[in-house]
Image (cartoon, rainbow, N blue to C red; front, side, top):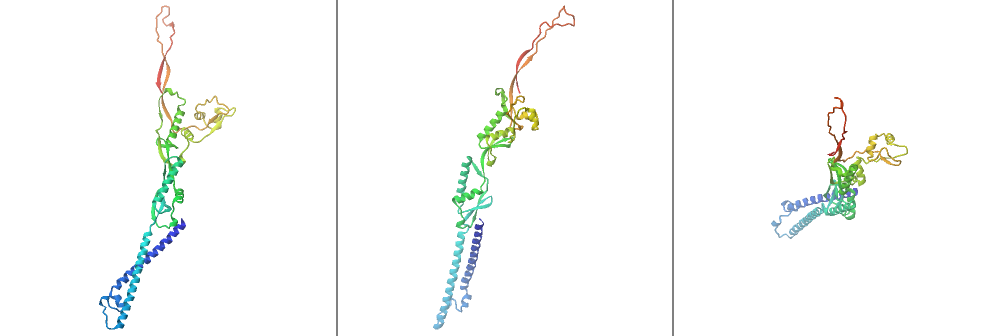
Length: 353
């Protein structure tokens, strides 16, 4: 681009010189023609005005005067022709001025084209290519504009050359599905279906220890929603990684394989974590029955999305038995005797927890 810029500067200087010379030439020509019409020009050549010229009897004098008129006419023709040539050069320059367009990306010139339509066609083609590559809608993040310029034919780009040049300078974002919790982005998936599958996995994780028949209500503890947005492709992660990240609150993976003679207590001491945290990191694992070779997670989950439920619990409640007092003459006043021992009754109670 440096050589093209230098060439353009030289071309502009050349045209400026031509236009300045043409303007000077035109001004002088106009002044000369004006002077020819005045008495000063004719007096310079020692002749009278054309309308006051009279033929005399002196033949020699007439020839001399006629010769001077021819000189004046020849000079007038030369000046007029020069003025017309200058005008022609100016018109030629103006007709070729601003004959191309610079393509600007974020305010920086990246290419020159004959017409803006040429660049627009290439941009549309690139957008379609990027869309097919990512199997999703895309959106350019750059500011694209045009500016009228002077350019030689060699500087103009089109077709494949223009496509490659624009491709090097363009950035774009892909339409994806973003899971939000309390209006904060949590994780980005490629599609809405993938995002929904992640949330289903999160729900399953938190409800695996609950009898589904007892669940009356379930909802997220946070305000959870899926939004489709244009984002940088680097933010997108696959479904499995997204599940772990949402449940654990981190993408970190630390696993310990149980060795002979190890227990939950010895493992917690080894990694300097509490027994409680080790149990939280391994829901569903019985701390008293770990097996050799079993893998234990060492990362305590801090879920980014959680589930709350309303469950119906059923339990038996004791019903107190009735007591009946009878007076007996066979017993002393302060003496009691149980004739029939009572038994507690039971009733089934349902409660929401």
